[in-house]
Amino acid sequence: MKIGIRTKGLPNDAVARERVRRRLRFALSRFADRIERVSISLEDVNGPKGGPDKRCRIRLSLSGGGDPLLAEDLDSDIFVAIDRASKRLGRSVSRRLDRGRSLPSERAPSS
Image (cartoon, rainbow, N blue to C red; front, side, top):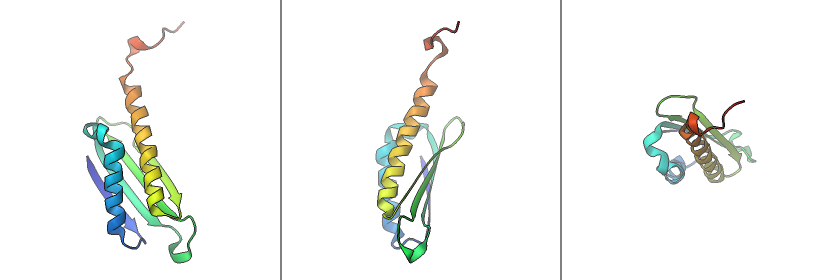
């Protein structure tokens, strides 16, 4: 699983980068062999003005193609945004892979 992280306007972004890596490993480790690439963007939208303006946007591409999965969260604390976006992405990957496992023979016959 390749992880690319881009930050903009965050102080001490080395700590945020490590938090993202750790959180994504936790949320996505069981799917690692099916994930091709993960791109993360961490940004302070309003700069020093304050408020819920720290954005974590994660884009994930699965092996075998298909549309990329996206998860985003906005909060005044970048670490909260990272945690929520990572958790949301883990659920999305699980749902996408579960849909791919259902075989046509397992579906109800159409009338």
